[in-house]
Length: 512
Image 1 (tube, rainbow, N blue to C red):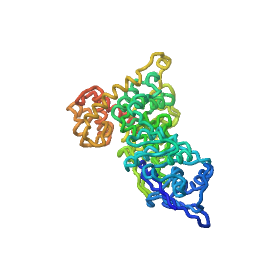
Image 2: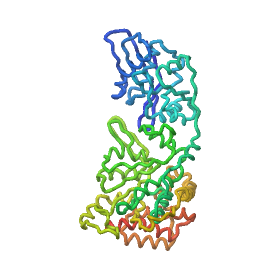
Image 3: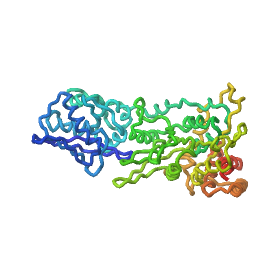
Image 4: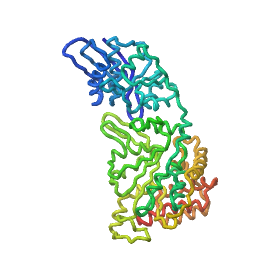
């Protein structure tokens, strides 16, 4: 006896339709066999599937079960095949009607009592079902909110195997879930952390505004307690509002990682990822036996914050070079090679020395010069060159700390950032993959970052005195272009170049 059900598997951040075939026969010895490149969780599903069927009050006539997951050359993982396996077995037994099975994709993990549990990767799975021309999908109730944002697909949630059986046998009506408005959700998604709560640090706030306006990477150097982490956590609140495409792309990655919020179902705010300095290179970049997205991909379209930068292992920091340049990560394994998007803003924070008080006039540094140099050289020159703005964060004076006056709010700063980004959107229309000044390549830099004679003279002097690299030269031009956009100027002026140069001088003063 034979039954077939449509399901899906995730590979990278994309999903593929899988045909679950069930063959049953009444022969001995009894058994349950799964073929078609299943990994551990799929092979273990046989116990869950048989227990769920039995505890749903259904008696199987056949005792030998063979499940094939086609195509057999794609590795299958996860517990989402429980429901389609169970339905395939029941279809082969004649317990359910087969007329709907070719029109529905089924996903869900079964509990031993027949209940349905949520699975990860539902968003890309729904996209693959729609693109394959499958009209509808039945999935666990807890996944419905996330799936509902895929237009052109009828979505129904169920709480148990018995409920799915009743739906397929026309004993229970199926109600398609309406598609909510992504635009409305994005408008309502606001950060609870506000720059108005930060006392003082006006120069640093200006640097954050420039970084957000152009999508530039940022390095904060200052003593303990100066507010580096507090400032960094408020950066997503001044970045431009996510577009629908950004929200959907980010949701795909978070869905694969099982990190979507069941209340919203979609990522409505720019991600802020802050891994601990003990993280491995695999945890940061992604990988594993079956490659999973790392922190750089989870921070896609948002912020990756590395606090205590010199405490990260050197090999971990060095693997950041490729995603910082290419905005993607390629993970190659013997069986598969996967590419994850990784277009994020890097914000790093560090002390200027092991004790933290080398640049603080209010405290005496207890570190020797050699100890300071060893500490600073944990950060390589090539990595520093890939960070556009280097900013000193001084300790906040008591007069500013005790002031009751609120600073400029995140909403006000965001308006200026949004205007600058709109200028850049118009500028780079037609330039594939470039959305902000930080993404400019050499042709765009030559075209949009031309300097007058005064600006060229200033930049030449800075290059010679600070011994800047060619990459740093391009970074200064990009930041100058962003500062001009914030001022609403078509051309880059001398004061824009001066401000951009000051964001490169601090690292040379410390690392020279």
